[in-house]
Length: 304
Image 1: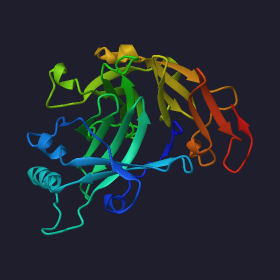
Image 2 (image 1 turned 90 degrees about the horizontal axis):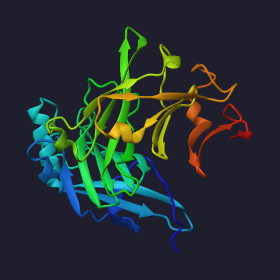
Image 3 (image 1 turned 180 degrees about the vertical axis):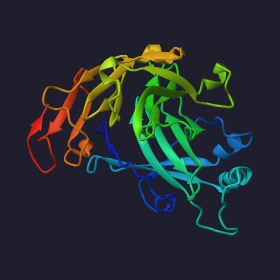
C-alpha cells in the first residue's frame, strides 16, 4: 500500500553510503540529455544516476543521491581545465560531488549538483516523471543576481504532457541598495527552439508593482497554483503573474502584489529573521494559505 506522499530530505546522500544500504534503487530514466554543457556534455550525463530511498509507511521520508561514474569525472576535469579552474589532484579517489534537492513539484525533481570544491562548476539536474527524462544544465550565470538558487518549475500545460520550464527570480543591486530592475530567467528543454542553444537561460524583464518600488523584496517561498506563479516574501507579501503569459516567450512580464494580512508585515531585522522558520505560504484545499506560528519561534499559537 502506497502512502501517496513522503517528505524528502533536501541534503543529497553520499552515493557511497547509499550503495551499501538496503532500500536504495536507481530511478529508471528513459532518456538523459545535457543542455549548454559543451560537445561532450551529452556523453557525460549518461554516466549519472539518481538513487532514491523511500522509508515506506512506517517512515514517511525519502532521500535522494546522485551517483557519477569515471566518464562524468573525466568530463568535468576537461571543463575545469578549459576554464582555467583548479582540478582534483591526480589519482585522487574520493572525488568531490555534492547534491541538494532544490524543489519537488508538478512531477519534477530539481537537484543542484556541485562538481568542484572550489566552486564555479555547478549544475541543475531535472528529472521529469512524465516522460522519465533526466536533464542537466549549467547553473545560472554569475552575472545574474538571483535571490534564490531554487527555481520554480512550471508545466507548459495542465495535463503535464507539454514540457516544462524552470524560472529563477532576481534583480540588480547598486551601491548597497536595491534598484527597481527585476528579471526572470527561464530554461526549458525546448530552449533550442528559441535560437539560443549556446545560452540555455532566457532573460525576461519583470514589471514590478508600484507599491513595491524601492522596497527590498526577497522571496522565501515559491509555488504555482491554478495557472499562476507565486514568489512570496514572508515579511511583505506575494508577487504573482499569469504563468501562461510567462511561458509564451514575451520579454516583459507583468506582476501583481498581495500584501500580508494587517499586522503581519515585518522589517527584516534581527527579531524577525529568519521568517521561514515560523511562517510559510502555499496552496491547499483549492486556495492559497498563509500560515504563521505564533509570530516568533518558540511560541505555539498557529494562525492561518
